[in-house]
Image 1 (tube, helix red, strand yellow):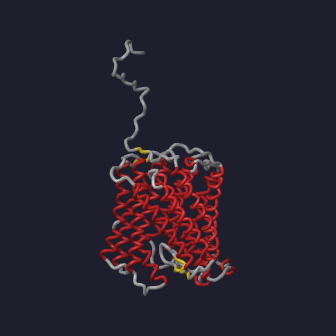
Image 2: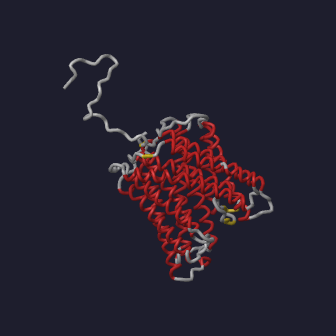
Image 3: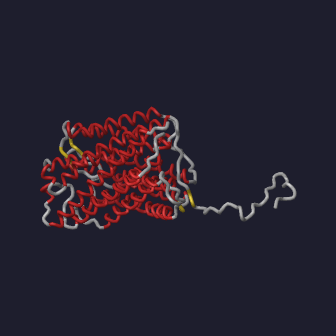
Length: 477
């Protein structure tokens, strides 16, 4: 029945209970960010193309790498030195260049439309540096040095390429720090994601400072692995905060894109991001308090990484998993995103669990970081799928786009299971061919599983490039 008289001005009649909107839970948050359509989009596209080039080239080297460690097949390839050269380039392209390229894409999108010349210079230097690193094995590679975090080819071409790439990253970080807001945080989903991305800029700045600090104080009498191990240890630890923050942002963003309402308030999310950000500042303290070659220096950095990286991840991971479990049915557009997100959480979790049981220097160590690094990679792959249509390209969908994250994750899971299996028998890391010294059938089976899983993962990684290229060809802007 309608009201007998119209309500007085400024008075709102109560809504009948039968037609009232259902109440929303206070902490159900949609984590998302708008994508600009100005010149920042052009800059972000450039970083996207560099990331794809890095994955393609790293895939080529990973094929050679896996074959060099697969029993039987490795006899058809060159010596162990060939394995080490392939490993260096594969790791640096698939981690360092790929991650920073996606970081450049995201930092370009959230920054103000200013200092674009600085952003273009950063992209240009990073591109030239990455290409020179990839060409180094064919134009005078130098000795392969299996240092942690950034393995090296100790020759002029590779070192020049790495320095140019680092200079590009430094300009990228400088622009990010310049454009970051000085005060104030928006306590909503978008504000939390923006804070997480800005925190990753700061973490990278600390990492660059650590690299420069180590270079300045390292004695020039050190050579080879001892030199590079100490040079990259502090900055490498700080970079783990950058990768972790990027992954957490991607998890929350993908959950929102899948229609999941994350029951984690932006204030709690900001607290987790802040914990990771504060922990990274243990890095300069470790440099001031201890000699960079001391055990105390290494222990301080390791403790900070476990605190800031580990504690910050668990609440967000649990909230994302619960949100996905209660999300509505998927659509053709969200299935690839959900597949990438679920695979990322599972692989990262597997890598973390393996890390608890590491003992000695064997192939359980690469099993640990392969799980964690691939967890980050899958999160960023899913975020690329989500951003492509918002950057003016086609929407990845269909069976290929949905199965790609699952295939990549399955291959990597087989890869790390094979490594854990072989590590239980004491198979050493960073060796190949006859140097692996595989005595028993079980050791050979473990490394064989590793090789098969690696090949499946390579196919999954290349399918990501195929799906993205297909979307790029369907340009809408």
